[in-house]
Length: 67
Image (cartoon, rainbow, N blue to C red; front, side, top):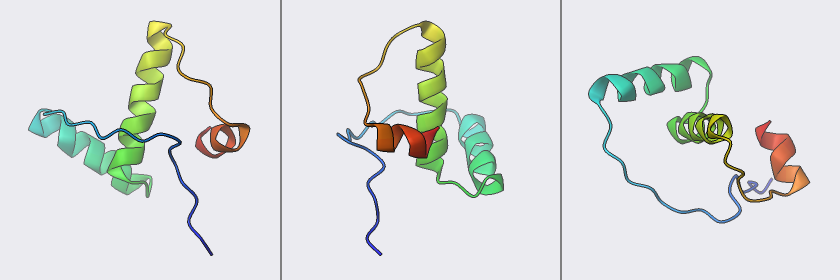
């Protein structure tokens, strides 16, 4: 079965974070059986939402998968 894409227009982001932050994210990802990238994307999405900044429109199919 072909793998579905998680991102519509991916951009690679490099950001240095504290070791403790990385460890916390890694533990969350492991406990939830998710990738570190997926946990990070969720955290960023929630932060952006709290800031009141609208993101780009996403397809209904992608929105359903990530909600």
